[in-house]
Length: 106
Image (cartoon, rainbow, N blue to C red):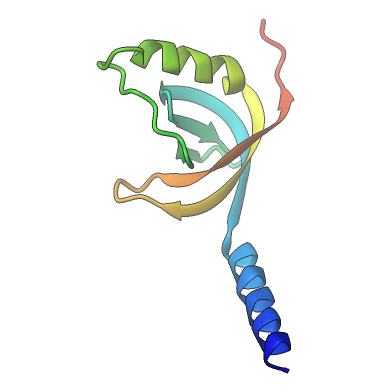
């Protein structure tokens, strides 16, 4: 009986966490550095995103430009889905980014 209550409680907490997570769709229009991007939604709203679980060098640090370039190759001008987990003290959304499609580069 006790085990059922614990499992049920954990399932409820997990469901609550999943429901609270926001998702944002859009196109990546700017790469700030190796762990921060700007997304443009279909409503023309710009959203600054900090990659969850990534800590890349800043632009002025060694390999900062390489980190920015590597991230740009992965997501710049691509359609993405961002699962936002929280917001940082600078107002950036923190989330995981999934590339959903690519845009033709002209």
